[in-house]
Amino acid sequence: QAKTRVYFLRGFMDVSTGLDQLAARLSQRGISSVVANHGHWSKFATDAIRRYNRRKLCRIVIVGHSLGADASIAMAAKLREAKVPVSLIVTFGPFQSKVVPPNVRRVVNYYRSNSYWNNVYSRGRKSRTRIRNVDLASKKSIDHFNIERVPRLHAATMRAIRGSSYRCRR
Image 1: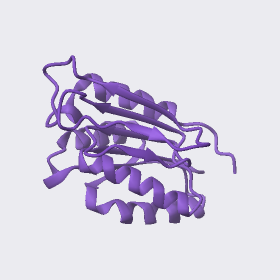
Image 2: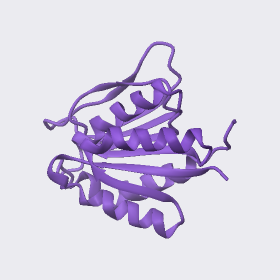
Image 3: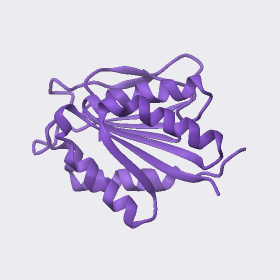
C-alpha cells in the first residue's frame, strides 16, 4: 500500500527544533517522517524518487524552516525532473522568494512581511499549484527564530498534512 511520507528540512545550524516536535506528533498518528538539516534535501529527493517509483510512497510532503524552506523548493524541483508529484509543501520563514515547481499541488508559506525573512512564493506560468502565503506581521510574539514552534501553526500544519491524503492516481 502506498503511503504518505513527510520530509522535514531544518534551517541553518539545525536550530529548527519545532520541526522535530511536528515529526514526533506525526509519528504518534502513524505518519512516516524524517528530519534533517537543509543540506540533506538532495538525499531526501533521491529517497522520495526511489520510494515513489517502487510504489511504496504516494503522497510526498515537504516541510522546511528558513534555509530548509528554500531547500524544500529545490527538492520539489528535483522531484519534478523525475516526474514525481509533491502533495504539499509547508514553509516557515523562507530565506528567499521562489517560484514553486508545477509538480507541487499545494503550498502554505508562513512569513513576516515586516522582517528580513519577508519572502513569498509564487507559481509559474501554466501552473495549477495552490499557494497560500500567510503574513504573520501582526503577531508580535512570532519571529523568525520561533515561527516553526508556534502551537497554532503546528495545528494548522497537521491539518494540512492530514488533508493532503488524496487517493493516488496510479
